Image (tube, rainbow, N blue to C red; front, side):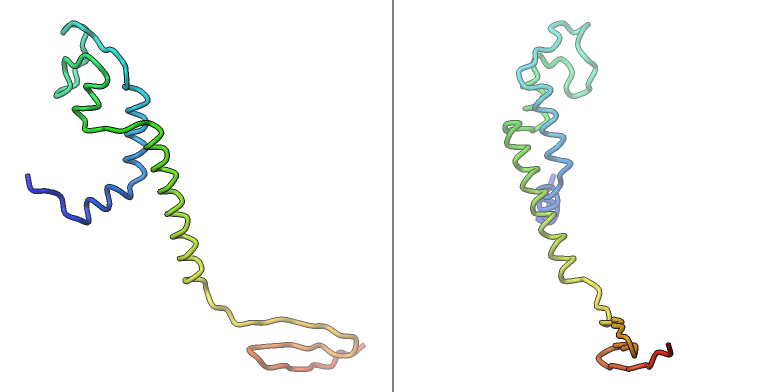
Length: 122
């Protein structure tokens, strides 16, 4: 099989789902001893007849420590939040500045840089 394209590798690295699933697999399977007999073994296709959770992790290609995966999730969350803040700052809507200021004898309306004074009848 040809190696994955660069964009696919980038998407794989930016996926929080990948790190979450790997962290759960490590937490669940690391150091676990599975069934020793074929009758008791789970029927998991290519993972049939594995004896330890570490062997399952190796066959799935999941490496590293649980804490490393959580740190990657934290770092990824910070990057996503920073990107969202930048997008909100750069893409904020531009509204015309309006305001109403009241005084005793007149009403002053400001509209798009113009000031209009309207007398108020009392």
